[in-house]
Length: 89
Image (cartoon, rainbow, N blue to C red):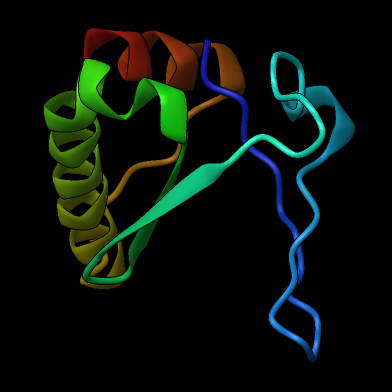
């Protein structure tokens, strides 16, 4: 399941990872941020080699979807239908 949350960046460039999304991340653990166009991907440094290609493909699909959204090529659906659509990816 994909978790989504909206956060703010502070004036110092800091962000807070919501508590429910920090499970499995220990204090002091190193994270990597990958910027792909307008997309940011955050991964644990210890997991970098495991699925970087998968993450980049996800970022590409997300960026393409956002471009379609900006052009007005989107449809409304309820949350359950949205989750079914996401799982098809």
